Image (cartoon, rainbow, N blue to C red; front, side, top):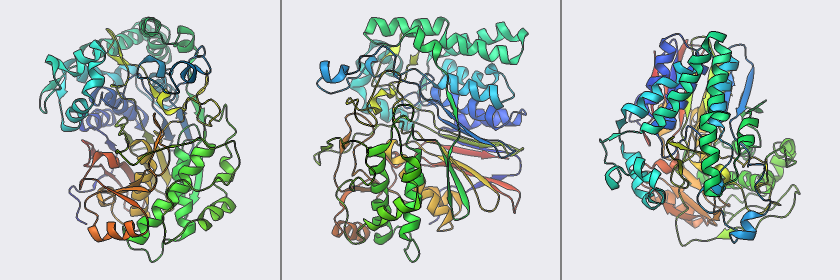
Length: 567
């Protein structure tokens, strides 16, 4: 296929992010002498302003960092449930449902994650990386199609809280494409953190970063957040805020065809991508044409098996014994592949092959489309020294209230926990949700490195797998690999409340031929038609170094307002 955009390339540095102004903010940092960590923090922070419907400054921000010396770490930018939340609140008082609002709140992790990355591996100040975001919030930016559509689609959610409506429904109606979108209170909150850093700057860079962090977790912003939570019946306290620190963890490493894939651990769905990649390799791709019925069928069945293991076993490793090593072992991969029927689609999740408690009863329904949670964006950066960053900031703004006067939507990521504490992803005081945002990075067999990722809830590992295979199995260039038509299975319980389950459902972009869809339907897939191009299919961005040419290439997904810049 001929891509709608070129793959771009440079010799010094490159960035690709979910909004073009975020890419520009990160690129300016690179041009000013900052490294990949500085640039990723600038772009990631900006995404919380530029995509306020799907990313929150006070949300989540899982990060993978590979330094030029080859060392790799992940920053688990995901907060836990408040310590004081009752252990069976939702089943006792809310009929087993998790209502919109502050009861979904977990400790906001993103500010700590970005500042931790800066303190550990960056070179610049918080003011350096946050000033673009402050400017976009205070001066505004042009409303774009996806933002306008998300606000209009979730109108009732934004109308629920007056402070949300004041920002997202200026004049009482969703903003139109091209209108200026301003977030004055959010600009003031960012400015407050910058001011606190400046006040401590005479003590050195580290003290300044700590002061910016303390402004959010121990100072005025923390007091505003927790006082509002208390008024609304929430459980987040000053003690929860002050105690939070993002865990610094080793990645999950998976070797495939001489490449090494790095994902975050079992506190998120990163292992789904790793397992699915091993499954399709064991099942065998040779002789299968790209996006042919046989290829897409095999892809869907392997993904169902990987999602089954996620459903049965994966949860916060601090609370759940996750058999991750066994899940990725050759013996288990072989057992899973042996259960795949090459001619018939499995209607739902394959049987449990590793024992760990009973499977929750999924809600099975074919009457309506899977609920679309648009939350999440992404940024990939590689700098001139060889440092690389992959980050997936997230959290939407229509299922919970902004903190009045701050413009902050505090993470409602608790929606990705089950209300049953016995489920591996069941909630508990101090436990982290099982997060869908899951950045990745791959060390290529030729010595190159490639950070990549996408938004898309449960579609994330599916879109990432397809792009990875397009690149490294089918040999496509990066932009074509991203733009190729995609599919996604929904034949497993959704990560997000209400955790709907759609047996057999396979969604396909409209550019996939009708005869292919008919052949898949004949295999038992329940076909759901997407438009030719849809943001629901993800928005993959990547940056790739090429040792043979000395170039750094970058690509961005036209399904959303994502753009790449390289020089």
